[in-house]
Length: 235
Image (cartoon, rainbow, N blue to C red; front, top):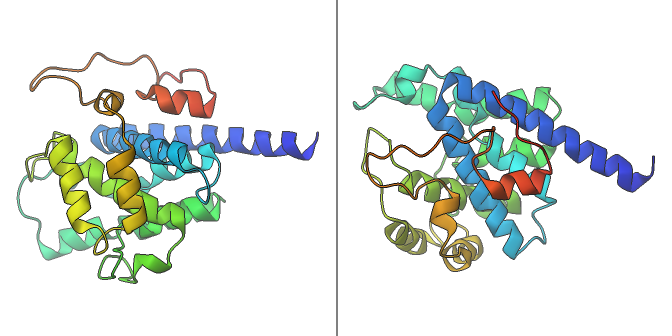
């Protein structure tokens, strides 16, 4: 096998491992899996506008799909809690970046995927978690994930502890937090690079109370399926 063939085989294996872990996450907490697919979709869209520095598409997708893997160790009832969490519960939630990164490292995922799991809640100027270091010193894929994760969290429905924002309001919030919470470069890329059909691609194009038709496969994003080059993967 040539070096190019070996690289292709490696990315194919990365994609399949990522989908298996996403399936386990969906079994534990479907909403977190849906969130992870949306984050991966946003990251892939950002990559399509500026691929330099973020790695190959399967690596970007794997980082997005698995950034919240650590939540598989958090009780689902706690993830769905509509009340204010106590201090111990907040510590458990905030441990998910470390547990997710440790799991991915043990499974020998690429260092960039592990870094995204560990550092996607860090802030551009510092003060995030788990380490509080300025994200300005972190790798580009992490900085892209920080923006994508927060953007998706703002627009997706179904979060019991707060109301979701419109896409326009969320983009305005990303702009407002550019240079403080987010890498200014990636904040601009996200706010200026998303096309008008992107809300539909994220699965947010249904009216309030309307159920989106079930997708026959693991990934409800056509962008991801094309990027991974994989057939649908039923449960």
